Image 1 (cartoon, helix red, strand yellow):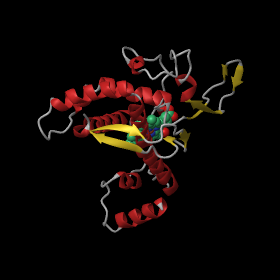
Image 2 (cartoon, helix red, strand yellow):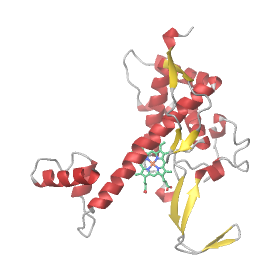
Image 3 (cartoon, helix red, strand yellow):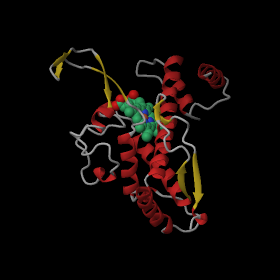
Image 4 (spheres, helix red, strand yellow):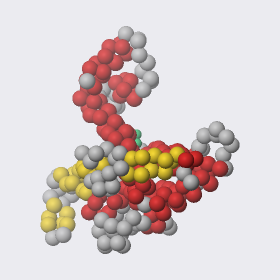
Length: 246
Ligand code: HEM
């Protein structure tokens, strides 16, 4: 389906029916490298799949998992609610969130980070060894493809005390040691949209807790990797609007 959309856009651009700057698809079709080579249709569709998975699925998975943890942990919910209501009460009626408001959501972001530590939505990714090196007594030759997995350090007691405990305070101060907390990857290939994701997640948390408390309908529901971390049955919940709570 994506290939058909790409072909159609190519035809529309050629006929002047689409704008070269209207969206990322037009940009990918119209931009060439320094040698004048344009991206192949397959590469464009692979990149768009990456954007859809990264931009929609990963953030959606984190928001779902946040709802799960907030429903399970009332003391965490209450602290997030307090922080978000201070921000909500500082706004004029109908006024939207601003960038400065997002910067004030420190506790909520610690909660979101702790959710991603315990259930990283993306488990890891691949790297190619740039040089021969030795790891744990094994020689890894240059050129080998390696898979790094975030859960290896996220759940290690060497880096996170009581690793199974939900504790947002781990992210206070300087936070975890470098390269131990990696839900967005690390190094030059790190997720380029980490900050955008942070904003989306915090805006979601604000609007959720401002209006609702949540209760899980299937408390024993498991988390599965499909391929991102997701509650197996889609996390059915009951929402309680605040004005209906005593
Ligand atoms: C909570 C949400 C997100 C998580 C947990 C996440 C996680 C990741 C991870 C683990 C990688 C691989 C990094 C590496 O190999 O070191 C990645 C790459 C990427 N992410 Fe995200 N991401 C999220 C949101 C987003 C959003 C919102 C977008 C776009 C709007 C996005 C776009 C990308 C792209 C394009 C790459 C590939 C970068 C490259 O290969 O150079 N991600 N992300």
